[in-house]
Length: 417
Picture 1 (cartoon, one colour):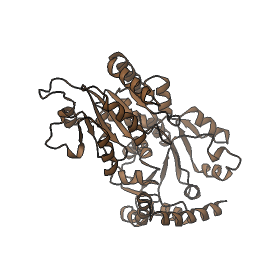
Picture 2: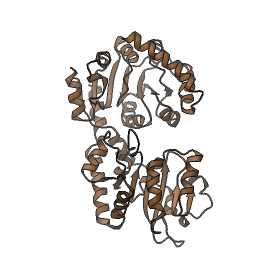
Picture 3: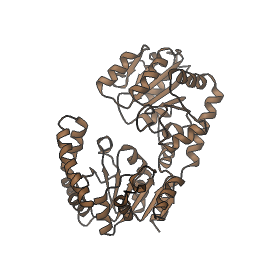
Picture 4: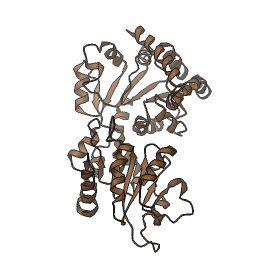
């Protein structure tokens, strides 16, 4: 079975090279993998001690940061190699200062797996949340390299739990231990014979709790919030993070009818020029872009569009209400824990069932899920004009984050045994 899987992977590689001619994202996917081995050989010496962490994309990387930081404290003499599968993760974090080498993960062929692992010769390997590449896992097992799954999630629909999933179940035998987020994942993995599993929770909670200890100030946001030149009165601020066009269809309708004492910051998921231009032209209120903010009195504007990346987390610290986008698409809503850690009540779209934290916060009523214009208006208005409700839901969100921290300590304690 592994032979046929590897053949299919080679065929997929050829197809991807052809498709890359027509897709900028796939072009990055293909081109970025050409320099992996030269990059690794220039940064990792044969005598180095190495820890390897693999993250599928940006979300998994952020999830792994608390564990990576803890490992660097425990093993300061080790070098850290971080690999990404997706361009949306690698291109954003390729210049991070945490890792000694950050690369794309070459496609899962036997030759790639052998060369990659031989080049970095890791003593410890962590896979974040998911992505189970059989050739890499088999090579790690063959070399008896300690391998862990961190913040794992298992679902019944995965191949491991189907009658035809024996090939993938065998790959799981590589892992020394599974650290999973919840009881359902633990029961699923146990149902196919794996008892080396611990419910550690989600390391993202540790990540967002740590955000509170950082400097989250942004002077230009303070300036934007003022309603008058005397800088006495501040607007109520709604922060819209990681929005997609389907979110924005509803949001723009609300913004265009909103009262002047309410201001909006929009940080779209896609900051390409045509997307930003389309969004800006649909808004009737006075609007300013982050890229054009210099030498302007930001207090004169009601809508502030953030056409850059990397500052959304800090912006959430200023929010009275947050809308987190993605909930009208697939797989669903983006990270709600960042506004939640600041005690901000949250509004999201209807697609959130794949995200345990969103499901829990909707159930606890710290987060409101909406489907229509009317539901969005009702949610925003109730939070804007009922300060007790706003504070209560914000408190629920903050408490939820605080109650779920601690996954990193459980994982590190087990690894160090």
